[in-house]
Structures are given as structure tokens and as C-alpha cells.
Length: 402
Figure 1: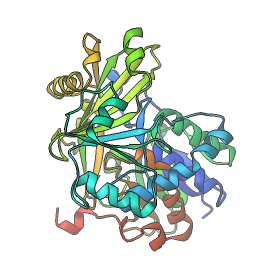
Figure 2: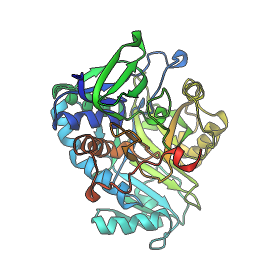
Figure 3: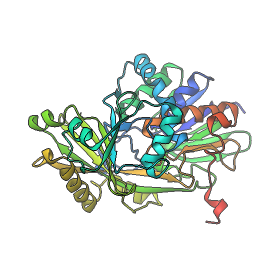
Figure 4: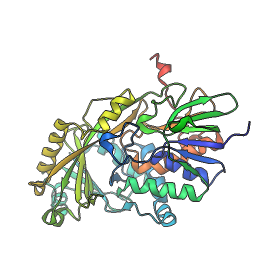
């Protein structure tokens, strides 16, 4: 049977759009299927994505060599993607880490310094006095040290990055189909993909499922991948002219408490589509997880967890007293955690259906390279050691007896 496409990528988010762009330069016959951002989030009953935002931290300073390398390779291509698409998404404002003085190889900061040494990253170490003097916007613990990556660090606009990837994918011949996939079926010599509207089906030689936190829903895979889809609440401070004078030149930042688990990430002031400028913060302390499309959708339609919002807001005002009096709002997103703590990029029980998912709450900065690995998987059938094939092997729930 003649198929409609050689490869269908399911999911028009950060990984899926990147995979489609890379595939467009490798082979013909590519389709990218997925819905766009809903215009009415609170009443939307379908799937969502976590890239519906204007700012995510990017940097190569990381405590894990694989993640640092994925980010480094992605950053290498930012300028080219911007130039060829005509869409800007990277703001090189630097990224500051602050926390208790680390010991070599111990804790996040200690491990990150070791990785930075191996990769020869340009990271400046700041003693407590220098840290407080250099970044007066922050009321940081007087004993904390700072680690500042000025170049190849800052924040990206995830919405704009997805637009840029999709624009280049289409220019390369990819057919972008605005639809929600409701089923995938391996029929032996090809794969059928059914979409929501009219029950229409498309066929392909191979399928790459890159549906983020919704990967295990809508019968996209022959068996579920072992992931934990967890709630995250983000908090926004609406800034006026006075606050912009104080915080307008700040970098992106991650500030630790006494332990690695106790930390907050901070995005500098960014204009949003409503015409206002916000400073965004978040953490990763929530325990709520989602096992159904309905529960995940209900979360995305909400403004997040009010208790978590209050905790983050209080932390923000302690760290940045200049935020006092700013209007506060919140929003919901999800993080998809894998059993291995790495992205999954590999085939399922079907040799025609592969999966690309698992951002582990740190993948926005690395999404272009993760997408490239998905494209290599589709064309070569395997990822070699240079592409971290062993580390990225998917773990399926069935293999753990669940």
C-alpha cells in the first residue's frame, strides 16, 4: 500500500516541531500533526502543552553531562534558527545560580561546576559580597555564593521557538496538520493515525510520538511509557515603571535554599500578549500527578494551586523586596518526569512507532537537540553512543509489571 507520509510526528510542541524541522532536511514525506494553542483555555476540552508561555530559562550550566550537552548543542543552533525563520526567541541576558558554597562534586552546584570544567564553560564564581553587589535586585542570604553564566544563557520564548521551528519545517516541505490525534494503530506494513475531526486517518511508514505530558493519552502508543506527569504552578508579578527600573536589567536566576530540593527559578521582566510586563517564578514542590486526559485538562484550565502560589509569592518577595505591592497572578503547567531522569527517545514494542518525551522540567533549552535526536531515530532507526542512545532508551510501564 502507498502511504500518505514516510514519517508522521505527533505533537506540535517544542520537541515535535524541532523533530519535524530536522527531518525536513533529511528526507521527504513528513507530516507534523497536533492542535495549536487553544484560544479559550478555560473552556478547552482537548489536549494542552506547556510551551504556552513567553519565557523559559536557558543555559548550559547543569549538574548532568547529558543535559548540559543537549543544551549546548541546541544553543549552537539558536542564531541560525532565528536568522532563517525571521523569528527571534533567545534573550541572552545571562543566568545566575546562587546557593550555599558547594563542595566539589557534591550537590547540584558542586556537580555543575565539575561539568562546567569538563565542557570548558565560561561561568564566573562570585563570593557573597560580590554577588550582592553585582545583583542588588536580590536579597540573597549573606553566606551564599553565586555562579554566573553571562554568555549562551538567559531565556527563550517557547511560543516563538515553536513558531520558528514550524515555519522552517513548512519551508522544508513538512505538511503541518492542525488536528488532535485520537488513535495510532500499527497494521503491519504501515501505521494508521486517526484524528479527531471526522475520524480522518493518515498513514505512514513510521510514527514519532512527541506529545509531552499527553503522550500516554488518546491511545498514541502500543503500551504506556513510564512517566510521571506532575503539576506545576507558576507565579507572575505584574511590573510597573518603578519595578522595571529595579528589575529590568536582571538575568534569569535559580536560587537554592539550604538543600537542592528547596529552590526557585526566576525569569526577568518579559512583555506578555496582554500588553503587560511580568516577572515569572516557579518551583517544583507539588506532588499532584495526572493519569488521565480529563484530570490533566482540568489542571490546565485552572490557575494552578493557590497554596503553592502563595508560597512562591512569599519567597519571591523575600528574595526581591522591590516586588512589594505588585499585582500577583498564577497559571498551571505540567512537567513530565521519566524513570531515568533523561528524555525518552526510542522505539516502543512496535518497530514503526517511536516515542520522544520526558522534559523532566528542564528541556525547553534543549528541545532543538532532543528534536534532532528524534529525527535521527526516524531516519537511522537507532541512536548511537554519540547521541546518548543508551541513556535515552524509553522505559515502558509494562516492563515494571504495572
